[in-house]
Image (cartoon, rainbow, N blue to C red; front, side, top):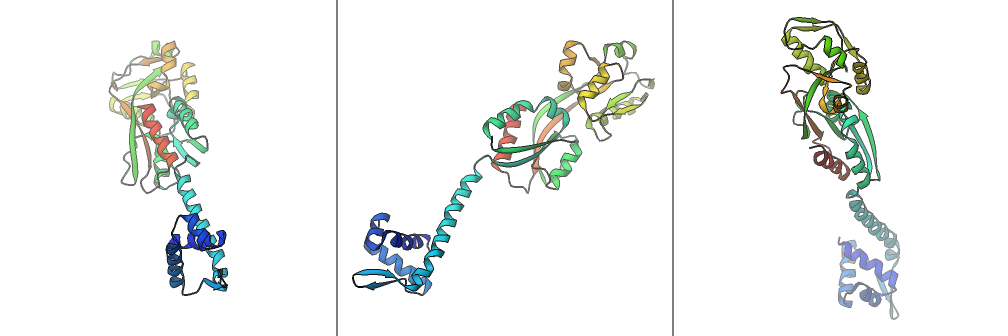
Length: 295
């Protein structure tokens, strides 16, 4: 059934006749008559009858009218829905690695807010392995994390956006006393201050210590990167973090770099989403801003 036939039927009723409907729709009289005939044929009913010199709705036509209104209103709503899909709106759940959230994401969030003020963001500071897993099960819309999680499989679409060096940091006082992290087979009586065992930074440095047979006193586990840095500045221990996360402290002398043989170690940031998930305009915008801003 042609939608234009329904529109013609509705216009005849609203305009009060075939002639005025033809003028409204810029059709010829014969076109109006033909379309009504086609509609009557498809429905197997008579919709109009001639009474005197006027065409009047039959009972069937009167009963059809509200259905036609509903159909055409629904079509109009569908057109509006299609337009809505191109707008930046809705809810976006994003899992972010803490260092990226604390030290890299601010300019992205500012730009996104300017371009998509009607989108509600839920930002979750998460472990990178958890981000990958929640992307796979569909809990998150986007993940901003590090690629060093052992692979993504075919169900995730990821794009790299940055390659970041790492630095082993200590306070100037700790460095004066314990500066050698290269000579193997050492016992160094200071703690390693870092996140939980699944922290990528921790795994990289602990693998290095194992290769060198260097043993530290113990490990202090904390969830807060700023708190980790404060303890390191207070001579409590050492930490291994992305250089961008300790850049200011290195520049002002609150922290200093310790030499290691991890000079070529970098971690790569990625933005990912479930390949089976519809990439909404808001998701696409956020991912694009990540690539453009953090590269």
